[in-house]
Image 1 (cartoon, rainbow, N blue to C red):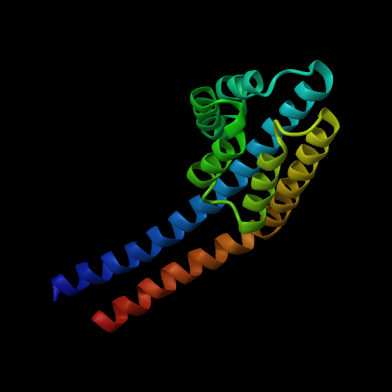
Image 2 (cartoon, helix red, strand yellow):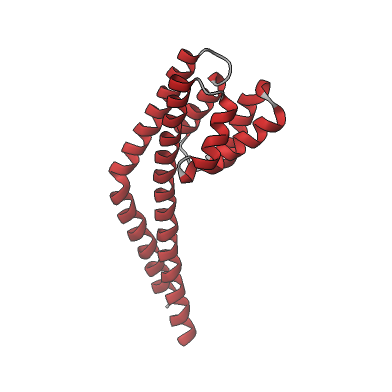
Length: 171
């Protein structure tokens, strides 16, 4: 009988861990969106005001950018340094695949579209593309923040309820 009680407790704990993991993923998504938008705003300012070359901007953001997006910009910067300017889009898309897997399809598409423009067109086109990408990321952030508490309650309730139901079935 005690083994059943221990098993039931572990099932409830597993449900709670499911809820904790889903909540952590939501929080990570929120933080990544805010971090990318902030870093892209810095990129926009550097291009508009200082006409800083893209390689320098990538190196700067990989070292001093918003914390959650540093890995992304480090990935792009490393590949860009190794492969060169003609491959910037490929470097950018590889970094999106590796570092932005938690973003929604629309957010990833906005990031990829930005990668198609960077280094290819003039300052005005690059700035417009960065602004569009930042706008998309901010929209995603706002929508996710709006439903965050409801989703946390949903995942917590779902995880614990499923754990309890399995525990009852076990007992």
